[in-house]
Image 1: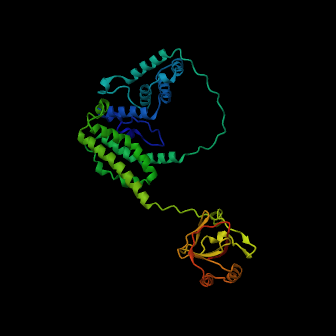
Image 2: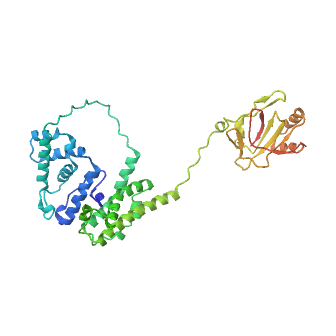
Image 3: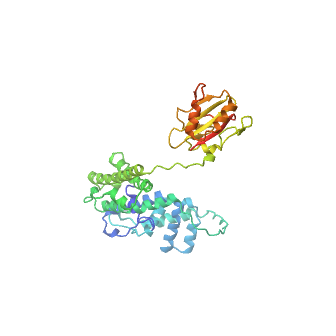
Length: 388
């Protein structure tokens, strides 16, 4: 129902409907609270889960052990949600009857008749064999992160529940603009994670009121709100919508303020593990330097023993060269290569150039045609030098 949430008290205490203070309610408030309470048990529990409530109520209301045992052994599906909800509400303080509600009928008498029917119809039910109890070593309970966030959301929205209770008790004086929902939730420390659950808590109530205001509500829903004017229903819709808008605002702000995740930096050895290269060439007397040195280098010299081309990679930025798969990356379009006509002599000269500046000057003396490098490495290419 619309304000099912208002029946909650605290996520750390029993959250089921609490009938404390019903004596001050008029018949309309009493009726609305009853319907919402029954709706709570319908949504939050199964008939099987509510059967123990009926058994507890029987034990507290004059049933002998034989009658309790007879009811207990009946099949769980004989107990319906209405019986369970009535018993649970009676245990939580609901009076057996109330002037002006349900024509003064006694709810406890109805429950007694329902219990008698279940016992009568279930006399031949076979009691299930008790399952073997396995003793487990006690362990510390593991709290699921989503359960913890859901609990936090419930605690943060308690004041919103109290506001809805005010509407239930006195819709005429209720003013949705009095509640600064964004400030309230931020004051409770609500973040995007909690607002998702807070929206879920109140979404059902808003949907129900929107259905009511659409004119297409069923008879039960119209009956629940028949004593409320359209003006007062609109007030509650406005309050629910302010909750949704506040949650959306907090979530949107969190996206703007969220710091970008830093990329995980991989070790240079891992980045170059797929890079193909020639370890050495005995004819020319050259050996590759460790390929990990390419990462972050400002320059790198490579020599293709098959094509006799020697190339110079120049870094595009101060971050240096990179490697992706089998290729060198992050180099400028000024990176080039030239063919050596006399590799033995020219490589010997090259070995004497120990700075990037001197290497660039040496390259300028090679008079063959200059072509662009494409970054690809293979088993014929020796990595001669890297410059940091």
